[in-house]
Each structure stands twice: as structure tokens, then as C-alpha cells.
Image (tube, rainbow, N blue to C red; front, side, top):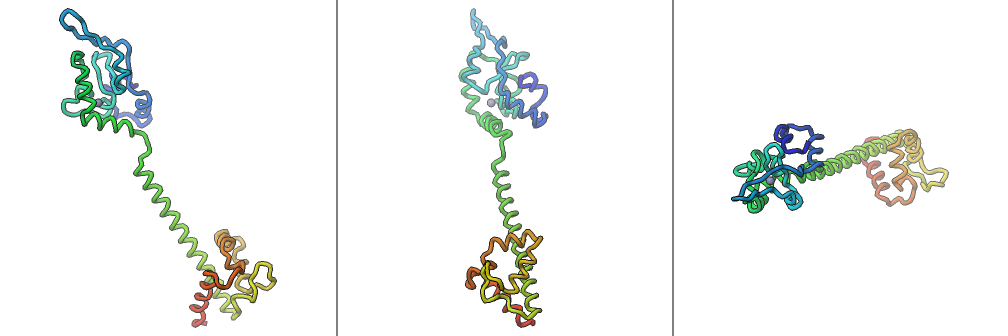
Amino acid sequence: MNEVDHLLEHRFETLSLEEKLEVKRLGPHHPRDIGISQTAGKNIRAFNVEWFAKKKWLTASIQKKALFCFPCLLFGGSGGEVTWSRTGYKDLKHLSERITKHESSNSHLDNAMKLGIFGRVNVAVQIDSAYRRGINEHNRQVEENRYVLGQIITCIKLCGKCETALRGHNESADFLNPGIFRCIFETMCEGDARLQRHYDAQPVFKGTSSTTIQNKLLDCMYDVYRPTR
Ligand SMILES: [Zn+2]
């Protein structure tokens, strides 16, 4: 399916993605006996297939007996470059200079680049995807924090209704009377994975220090709550 004659009949842009990727994978077709020749006086100048090794983009049509440029055949040529993408090149006498001229043309460089990046992961999309993943993770974390905070407030309100102290004298993990807040919160954690995760990750409920940020937060919330009792 990478033959020039096939691709002239079935334009690259009309192929499915799978077919396009297969054409790219196969690369330029290099027929061994294409019969391209040109009379030069008494001599006959024949196309040397070694050109295929020198110029990787070069390909040839068996039916047209003409040379083509693979990237330009796939992605189209413009101006004088349609020779290499639509009609085919036959002038062997000036082949070397025409090859040099074509491969330095803007349209060829553009098409060669299109072929090179075709089928690869779009870097911009990849960056955009990573950016979106970062935002989603941030939003998930914010949502979880709000949920945990809401449950802590619920717990504080409950303590307030019972008119009992939030903290015990000693909240260390092995202390038998750690305070009503911690007891209620531990009960709330049962069957609540998000709350349990927070409980396991935060030292405030392990009674490490009353000066931790988390404990200060509890004090602030208690102060906010107290006037409404
Ligand atoms: Zn080209």
C-alpha cells in the first residue's frame, strides 16, 4: 500500500488512521526495476537505484516510470513542486540538481516534518493533559479537605451541645481518657475512608502537641462556635 501508483489513486488524506500509520511504517517504496531511462545522444541514461539509498525520501512509480518524493506524495506539493508529488519527475540529466533543489524547498521541508511527527503523541496535548490532571488532583484534594473540615465542625458542635471539653488532659495515643472530641471523631472514622485517611495522616489526633497547627485550628473553630452556645 506504500506504492506510488496506489497512493496516487488512494490519496493519503482519505485513508484511515491505521492505514496512514501503516504507510508511514512501510516508508517509501523502492522498486528495483522501474525502467526509467533517457536517451542522451547515442547513449541511454538509466536511473541508478543507488539514488534510493542516497535520498531516503525518493520513491518511484512503475506505471508512470517517474520519480516521486514520498513526504510530498503523502502531504501534497505546491508550486513547481507538484512534479514530485503528482506528475512525477523524469529528467535524469538534471536529476542531481533537481533533487538538491527539491529537498531544500519549503514545501518539501514542511511535508517531511509533517511525516516525521505524524502519529506521534502531540506534545501540546500531552502538556495540556498533565496540566488538567494537576488541576483535577488539586480540586479533589480541596474537596476532601472541605469534607474533613465539615466533619470536624460537626464533631465540635456535638461536643458543644454536650457542654464537654474538646480535649482531655492527655491526648496521647495510649492514654485511656483522651477526650470526648477524639472519641467521637474516632467513631466517625469507622466506615469512612476519607476521614480515616485524614485521622491516620494528621498528628493532631495522636496527641503529639497542643501547639500544632491542627490544634490551633480546633481552638479557632471552638472560639467561633462558643458565642452561639
Ligand atoms: Zn518532497
